[in-house]
Every structure is written in C-alpha cells, then in structure tokens.
Amino acid sequence: MRNPMFVYDEQLTDLIFDYCRWRLALHPVPLDFGGAQASSLDASLKGLINPDGTDPRRIMEIFDNELATAVVSCDSPRFLSFIPAAPTKAALLFDMIVACSSLQGTSWMEAAGAVAAENQALAVLADLAGLPAGAGGCFVAGGSAGNLSALMVARDTASHRMGDRAPHRPLVAISEEAHSSVGKALRVLAVEALLVPCEDHRLTGAGLRATLESHPRGDDAIGVVATGGTTNAGIIDDLAGVGRVARERSLWFHVDGAYGCAALFAPSVRDRFDGIELVDSFVVDPHKWLFAPFDCAALIYREPHLAKAVHTQDASYLDVLHSDAAEEWNPSDYAYHLTRRARGLPLWFSLAVHGTDAYRAAVETVLAVTRETADLIERTPYLELVRRPDLSVVLFRRTGWDRAEYERWSSQLLHDQIGFVMPTTWEDEPVARLALLHPDTTIGIIEEIIATMA
Ligand SMILES: Cc1ncc(COP(=O)(O)O)c(C=O)c1O
Image (cartoon, rainbow, N blue to C red; front, side):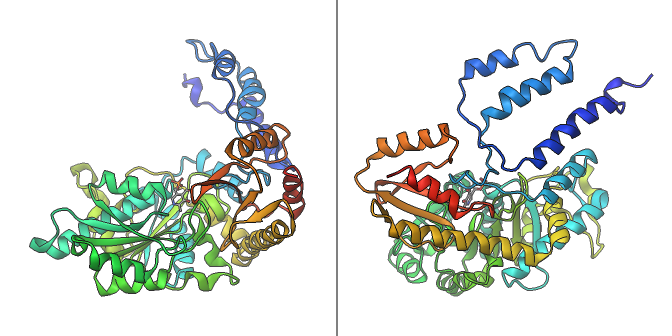
C-alpha cells in the first residue's frame, strides 16, 4: 500500500489550483493588512497541526480569510514602501512548475537542464552590464546572500593574491548609503568597513581616493562596494570613478544593484550606470524590479573561476560533482549555498515568453510614472520634493508635518486600502517615500495618495 501522502489527490489539487487561478486573475490585487494581532492569528491556527491531520478545505479557508489577509500584498500597485515586488504571471506560473517538479539547481551532474536555462538568463544580465563573455555566477536567495557571497570572494581572492603581504585586518570601502546587508556581510566575514564620506549621498571615485590616501590603514583596503541604486533614495554611485580607483589599486569592485540594476534595461537612464562594466562582481535582484517571484537574486562575476576557487565545497560525497568537463557549471560553486532551488527559472521563462523588449518597456513605464510623480509633487503647494529621482524612488516633504503626522497618515492610508507608504528619514528629518516598481502603478494612484496629504 502506498503512503497516502504521496498519492495524487484530485480534490486537493483542484483546491490548490483553483485558489492559484483565482489569485492570478485578481485585478487589482487587494492591498490587505500586515501587523495583525498575534493572539487572533494564534486562535485561527489553534489545533490545525494535530496527530490526525485536518481537512484541507478548512485549512485553506483559514489561510484565505485569516492568514493571507494579514499579509500586505507586496505585488499590489499600491504597495509603495520598502522595495515592492511585481512578478509577471508567466514567472509566477513557472514557479509552480519549479515547485511541482522539485526542480533543484545545485550541480551540473544532477540538473544540467535547469542550470543551462538559468545561465541563459544570467547571460542576459551580464551582457546588459557590459561584462565580457565568460562572466557568470548563479541565482541566490536575495541581495543580502549575493553581497555576502561576493565579498567572501573579494576577501579570499585578495588573500591568495597577496600572500604574505595580505593585510592582517583587511578593509572594504563602503559609503554610508550602502545597504545594511553589506555592513552585515562584512561583520560575518570579519572584514572591517572603511567608511567613505559621500558627495550629495553618492560614493565617488574622488572621495574613495581621498579616503584611501588619508586613512592610516588605507593600504589595507582590498575591495570597494558601490551601490547601483540606493534603497532609501535610488541614487546611483559614481561607478566609473569608483571603478577606475579600484583598478588602479587592485581593489575588488562589487556593485550592489539589488534594487537599481534592473534599470540597466532602460535606455533613458543607462548612462547613469557607466562604469558598471568595470565590476568584478555585481548583484541584481529579479525579485525586485525584474518581475520575478521571491526569492531570486542574480550574482554575477567577471571571472567566475575566482569564485569557484572560494566557494566550491570540499566533501568526499561531493567529489563526483566535479570533473574536467568544460561545460560543467555547478551553481553551488559560486555562492556559500549548496542545495538550491532552481530559482532562476521563473525569470528565465518570463524573459523567454515576453522578450527583453517587454522588460525594457516595463522598466521605462515605471521610470516615466516616477518622473510624473516628481512633477506632480513640485506642482503641489503643500508638498516639497527632496530631490529629482535618479531611478524610481521619490522622497518628499509635507510641509509642517512631524514624524507622528507621517506615521498617522501612513496608517490611515493602509486602513483605507489606498496605499502602503511608509515614511523614511532623510538628513535626520522624517520624509515621505514612494518606491515605484509595479508597471500598473499609475499616476492616478499617486494622485489619490497625494490628495490625502492636503
Ligand atoms: C541596494 C540593496 N541591497 C541589498 C538588499 C537586500 O536584498 P534582499 O532583501 O533581497 O536580501 C536590498 C533590499 O532592498 C537593496 O535595496
């Protein structure tokens, strides 16, 4: 007798697929609410996991009515906080295939088909950045995992290259605007951050050079991280200047483009990324502005063999994964992970179905609505634009408001299901922040939000 947990169950399948079909067809997606009372969620969940199992219809009812509604839909065009998401339908559907086929993408030996397709998607991104043929890497869970994996390669490559001359306590230069995951990665790696002051919130080549020359331990720097679109304000660092200094001083040059490097697709802003072709590694998250579901970040190296030397795991049972075959490519050799879901495939499928022109157009749409938003704010008497957006984040003030008023407004906006918009801090002052990313976020939605601030 087969174990019933592994027998195809038509009713259960219909239950789940019907839900997925309904969710995929929703337009618009409801914004819903986060931060529900823990006690009421506990009451809904009580007893669901028990020795005998629970009717899946009851579980789905609770999921649908109590749990799903206590999660703000980050794929709603009204979700404008933090960094939103906007997966294409094609990507979401293919994610179900990845799940239903248990598609893993750990090694070439086990998963060549999945890995070859993921690599095709990575090559599109490497090309956009202007990296030479031969560049490559893998998909990891997020920008944080990508930054950590790349900086581990930076640290160990410097140590191998420099041998006895390697600094005892290496430094990596970063700006105060670098994402918090970069500082955290450096702490994990026991590498110290060398803080470079920004010029108008940008890390510049001149600033980097001045810091390296004036800091008593400047010669201990082994790498630099620039940001291709800061999270708080969408500002792109001086990649060309930073890249030149990195080359001169043999520093590993990493660009954290987790949010912003999607805009490499967009001709209207492509020149702001000049210098990205100089990177040793960069990260861009398809689960952000490249319309893939969670969790998917692309990590790409100029010379992947350097990453392989650092990340390949050495264990007797894994020896079989490594051969001399030229085409062999083990994603597990390019980041700190081992077993991994073939998480690049939803992006790959969507890119193949829609074509790269559709991606270019979708990113440009978001940039155009962002510019209209900035114009609208400039025209609105009770608002003040903090700065023209480089990408798709808009910072602005409501004259006369303090932090408590921004917070009250933000809660009311979510309560009324008009938008999810959280304030941020800019130069020690609370300001409103809109992060646009969904091509369905219209100027009409923005007008509705702004009207509530009058
Ligand atoms: C610039 C930047 N780097 C890194 C990250 C972290 O990415 P993740 O949340 O995918 O780990 C973010 C997240 O917003 C980001 O904006």
